[in-house]
Length: 596
Image (tube, rainbow, N blue to C red; front, side, top):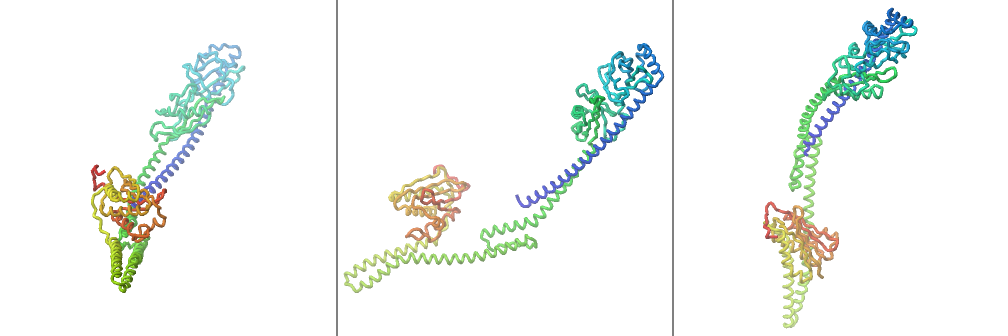
């Protein structure tokens, strides 16, 4: 991922994160505000309902009081107290209920026996337990009806004035839609009364001042919770799948005289306003986020032009320096940190170039000194016999001719041998200094290994050195110079033979390792020290008493020219292992299977 892409991602995530956090915070705050308003509105509605309930109860109690003080009821009570028959008064309750605007009315004797019932005339003679609540404030009561249903009503019990024994009036008004219609609700709030708790939940048992919503069945959980717990229950009710149609509902249980729940008052405050505000906030957040992302793109492009472009120029310059172009400079004239970095880079390259020149000069001096030392060492050995031989020849001039001829012949042979030795030494140094350029061609690395083994096989047998091979069955295609690779492998095999003067095992392998051909030559000789492994490829360094120390330096030079690498390892079982890695060139070489 480029710096430009990282900046764009960072700015975009920052903008989106900040906008999302602000939108979530504002939305949460709006929700809490609306919930607080709903609670206040619900509390006000409950208080208002209680006032309306009290007013209705007072009005109903006053109606019963007027009925109890009326002359017809007093005469009726007087007749009953003097042994009058109750049969003529079986239907008197219904017209009285209509006259005093009561939904329910029953007349009962002092023992609670029903004399007349407006809502259920056939209950004549049945006992009415409500007479026990005579004189108490109005209360809620479940009233059974002839059709088998029941209704909840607000009831009061009064005794007819002057009756002895008392004649009781049990009257009430039903809590229904008409009762709620007189109850003024605020906009957005709906009030429903769930009645008839004797059966399982049925939306048809709801009564309200407005039509019951289609999703009234969703109130079941909150109604059952208030009914079973006997206290207020609150929650969010989703009438449809749309959030706009959800409501904050409060279910208030309405209890009778015995504290049993007879009905549930449901106050539903619409959440439409809150949802619309939240949607509006979300739409604004999307817009702000979109604008922020556009700003992030512009900002990232601007910053990238100010930062990433100079950094890319510095990276290209660093690559050029790594490739050997020590004259590379960057032309960044900014006055900020990037400009400081550019000037520091230019200064660093200048210092590196100076150090490189000094290092190259030092290496050249060191190389010439080492060359002079090695040449002096190598030339000193044949020069000393030459000097002795010449001195012997000078002394032999004073000898008789026959003896002189013998000394002369011996000295001449010695001179020729040592001169040939000198010529060999000079030739080796000359070969190293004139390493030819590799002539690359398509080849199989296995062929170079087989060629070396075939050449040195007899010599290895003669020195009692066993050969172990592990050559891959599949081709190892490379581009290389067969002669130079043969020369490099020959030097390694000759070193291995010198390391095993008393015999041993030479193990040669050729295999594929990732994208390289791996050639390994291991001996079972005395092995090498850590210091020797580090200096082994240094020109003119040798661990033997004879030799120029150029063999392994030539190996490294050949392998490097083939874009490969060579290392020396110290196996756990002793000896030394030389490993050559050469790049596979499958794209330019397709060897037939016959070469395997």
